[in-house]
Length: 129
Image (cartoon, rainbow, N blue to C red; front, top):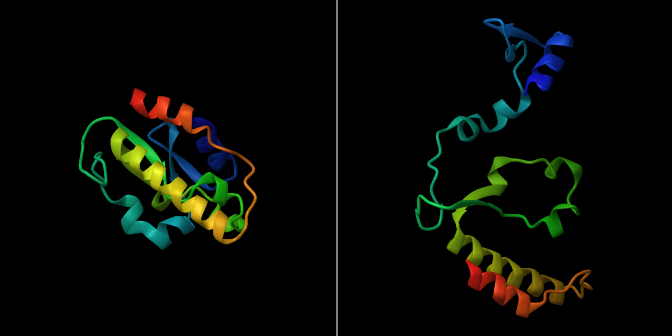
């Protein structure tokens, strides 16, 4: 963003490229680039990672939000490894399987749910897809 680019320039951490205020060249090597440079910079196809469907993509978070808040701060960052692209059908199937696994974990460790699912409404929602 333009605001973020200006912040780097004001701090002396970047130079403006070709007079464009939203294009900057950093004066340092970012930490994230050294860890997963190949993955982060690689070209990714915009298709469902489960079935290859090229239409109607949705983000699917591998680690559910209900668990992410329990992680140490360094693991709460938004990293692209945690997000995959799924079509609507695969997103629904993965969401259902995630909920089943969460229920198993909560039962195994005697975790009291802070929420409940109204399965009647869930059926209405899933039939709309």
